[in-house]
Image (cartoon, rainbow, N blue to C red):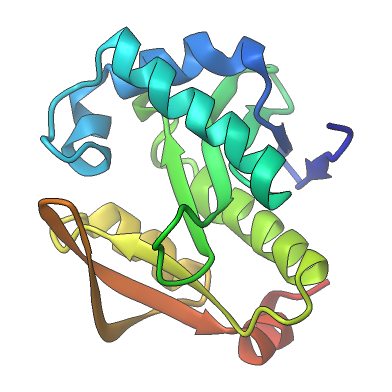
Length: 179
């Protein structure tokens, strides 16, 4: 895909097959698994493969999905951020996962703002963006606040896990962050 987004410090592009090794390494880290896997255990390569191919297919089916995020200065892969809406999801979600080596640099909100701007431009009828966040994930809650989302009274059940829905309405979000 020829889509590329750029921020002050980051380059973002749709997932490509060559991103698998980086994704698998991130998903094998306990600190990431604590909030991104249903059993809170690091993913095996096989489980990471199935998840990764699902994300690649999501782009094909929906026309949007997670972006691989790269640091401009080093070219390092730092994580995945972007819009995501699997079957049965309550709405288009902006999700993020940054490798622990890059935590605390503000990459998640920087990339999320870029991808939300992009999805709102691509989907003019989209009235809000959501993020599904584990109630114990304080770091993701902080990211959600930084990107203009607020915790709603809604929850969503993903198999065995109940998550909180954070959301921002389109018009208010674009007034604050739109380009």
